[in-house]
Length: 357
Image (cartoon, rainbow, N blue to C red; front, side, top):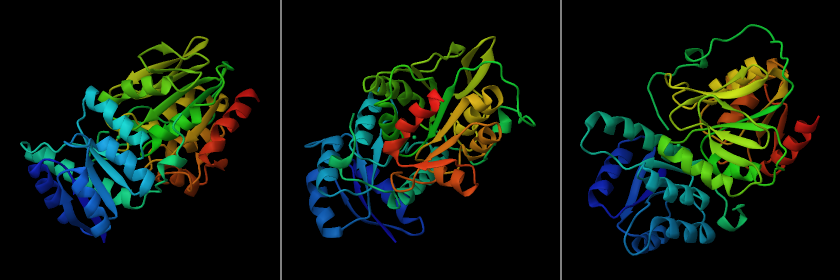
């Protein structure tokens, strides 16, 4: 049984979350708190397995409380956030401070959306209960549409047979991630030199967050990090992060590679989908590509990693110990597609070596 403590200053939100989580099998709300000071005492008293934490509260904001909690008593936390550009900055800071994941505020006036919301928060609480949480002091300080139907990358790109022929010799690195990925991406990029090949990233993140995320990462690395734009040339020393509501597809355009943005259906219940990006790299970059799968829940990207491997690209995955959730990299491993399984701290170094081979 997963014991949950709900921390939110809204009595109505506390009531809604309690009703949703108590209705789910294997989950029990053991208490609620209207502010972090009350929560601090209830954590000691109730010893919950997972917290849901409102970002904005009186007396002490959720991010400050989270930072204190992760230094003194690390535990899985799912943030309750407003999915706006303003909310993006606060939520990204919460992820930096150790939150496992986030969900939006419940929209109580739309019954159909509340049903979808129920599934999302239940899944994220269950995932958080199994997450690997580290004390904040050990962390290096340098999530997404859902649908009931699970499309494959075929909905965006037709799978090609056999290996392609590639005349362009420029390398491109493709990175896929989900839960825990915003911080893992920072760790990988932080110490990379400015002469790295172009890097494309599909991270499961809301559309309102992807631009802010790119700006934050840009401040931490010698590379130029931007949110990808349609038909933008992929240049060395640059990192292109897929917008949170578009698939990123890499294509050849004469003697260069470009990002194209696709507004097709969700793939593996996500947009952007890692499978779509990896398939485009397999088809258009082939053995000049490098595949990296970081922490994340689910199996998005596993099939695409296999297609990249079949076209001669090396496949690197983050190891289980350093992953917040070893879902996506674990699936690549289970299917036999991983060439190397590395701790997060070693992936950047390995990319430098591979990019110079």
